[in-house]
Length: 295
Length: 190
Image (cartoon, rainbow over all chains, first blue to last red; front, side, top):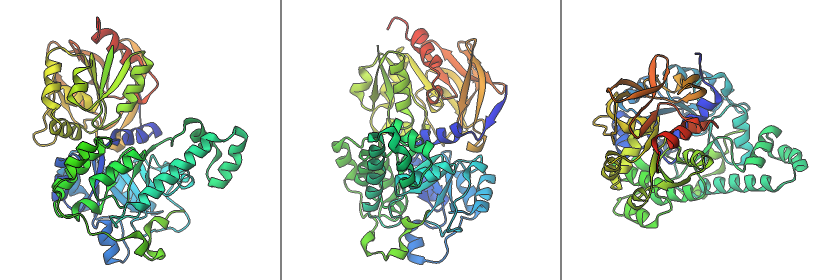
């Protein structure tokens, strides 16, 4: 009996298993263990969290394979890693390490200002960021098996994640309300393939799992995104840039499961210590906003 | 019959859909009162370490263990199979399970995500397409365990008494055969 690897169902199915969970950015083995012990459903291995990339500047690239492999050896949960937008060789390298998921991420400095990676060429699944429905469908058309709303990474300001989730949700609801003969123009306006537009109009949802990322710093932020319809959350700088990472990590995991239970949310929000200091997105000059990277 | 799906993390919505398509009432189980109200339980796919962590934190771990021990019909897919195994190989340090099946599973046995696959297999005499995602396999099993399907030379669907487990994810396909088998064979008389 033949076994087929790397199918769309297997790639998208992997994201289904992460639903209702928290994926945490970690920069070393110690943080990866803290994340796993706190109940993270996966970790994102990277050398600098977005807040540090933002603070230190310079070109941000794929992490050192040694660092990624050390984290793979340290935890039993899935390990993800980031590559630059359009940098398909970084993706080939990450795939060869046996990483479980690639994030083609705007948090790193783009390698191509016109094209994203052709993700159908890989067995490893990809997650990509999106700020609106058209962008999400273009990424899915290129082979993304999971989408995350972008937010504004490394800020601790949840407002952009909120805006992107509202935009994606509103655009999906609008498609569902259109007549069938209006979907052609809708596809033109969204700059997305007609077949995917039609599928979303019929099902009322994306054909892949939708997580939220960018600026989530508290259990309440995580629950907010879940109530907005996210399937799960990425927490980047929010955990390990805070006063008590282990406790905050566990609190975000609980809040993501019990996102509709205010009593649980109150309980897990108590005594967490200092949250990451954060930056208001409005104070970041437009050329330095990461969410605008992606085409 | 009222079927509970453990809804702490993972693809519990797909199991709820499959259950209702089989004609049974399905509820999400996150609390003790919900657990106590159900006639059968499904443990979904997801991250077994995350699910155990949350079950312990919210005082569900021991009650689930006890209900399984008392004969509650249970079905687990993938992470669910790990949670039902008495013994785990390649688990997280000190990883605990609910138990109920006299098996030893190897976690992520088929490899990492790039090795995840789809394959045709035969379950209880019926051919079906099965989706394996970072799946475990059954490495060893006790005399009371019946093997219902194999893939790549390993047991991937097993049952014992009122407990059923599969390494693969029928909930990700439109095939309801496994769920029907669970409701008809494990939940008889409920």
